[in-house]
Image (cartoon, rainbow, N blue to C red; front, side, top):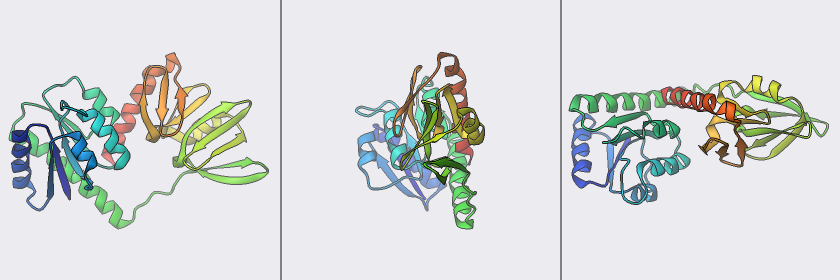
Length: 240
């Protein structure tokens, strides 16, 4: 198990290191003074304690880039400010610790993070892989199967549905409503012409969702519910 601490203050890094070593002496511990140092490292932390206010890349920017490199890292933000708590949801943070806190609270949060890490490993070892949900469509006279988890987003254009997947763009005659019903709560209909996969969202604002590949519009009336659904998705993801 690899645990990392990223904080620009040396005394804070050393304080956290001491606490972690007392709780988990067997863990491989890495300390970083900046987000840049963390991102340039060849080590991939399983659990990361991350400060938000740092020179250069702040904690949120660092977390966003790290998510692209290693999606399953368990991120615990440690900060003196509580104003970034909603942004923490956007990067799938496991917890948001606001300074000052006592040793008991620190131990509780770290132990819960370690439990989640160990539970994931148990599932991997047991080989409990859920069957990938898929969609059967007809395009160009052929019947093909598309794994729903490979769809980045879908859009309607000229009576066709276009599936933008990780490998290709696939067009077929169909209705967005039917696709929306099949995809479930891993996706959200942001606009009458767009359906997005939460997994591939990189950032968003009041009008647009920016995805791993491409972007989708958000209707003004859908924005509030979209944000709530995305937060719930990230909460579910942390609990897996």
